[in-house]
Every structure is written in C-alpha cells, then in structure tokens.
Length: 135
Image (cartoon, rainbow, N blue to C red):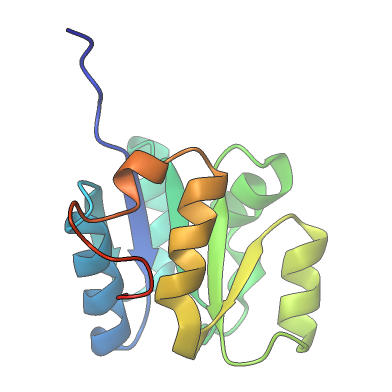
C-alpha cells in the first residue's frame, strides 16, 4: 500500500481569530500546520523547515521585504496564498505579479479549498462526508 505524506503549511497572521481558523481548517483536512503571529520569525522557520504552502495575512507592513518570503514567491518554490481585504491594493497587485494567489478575507475558506484543488491537494482539501458549499 502506497503511503501518502500529509502536506504541510505555514500560516502567518496577526489576528488570532484568522490564524486559528486557517490552522484548524487545514488540520481538519489532514494537513500539518504551523501558525505564527510575527512575520519577522518566518525567514528562520523557512530556512529550517520545508512547507508545501505558505498562507499570509496581508495586514503585515512591508510584507515583501522579508528576504526568504520574497525568494519563495519569486522562485515559486512554495505556493503562496495571500488573504487580503482588497484585491485592488498595491500589495495585491504586487503579489499577483509574483504568482501569489489572492483571497478576500471573508471568503478565504472557499477560496483556499479551490486553491488546494488546483494544487493537486484535492484529497486533503475536503472533509470526508462534507457537502460542497458547507464550508
């Protein structure tokens, strides 16, 4: 029997409620998830641990100044999912230029489910027995 490894994600969000919600959303779907509140800790974590996905809350100032995050985005070695209030902001435009997937804060769960399917994580993107649209 072929063993399937659980994908892993790093969730970086200042707001506890958003961070906890995203972490629990992914854990319920079989992901190994680490959540962090402070973006300045991300470069050292990313140097030592490999993730299949990075999810970031757009409310961080100077988001793309963290060197390791910029490298991950520009090289597209790790898919990045950005949760934002505005898809038309300068930050959102810069992010899309680097291949980052954007989601509105109020629809992040639906958008993330779709994104996981596009990445080939469909079997990790749903809860067994759940009805589509129940998210």
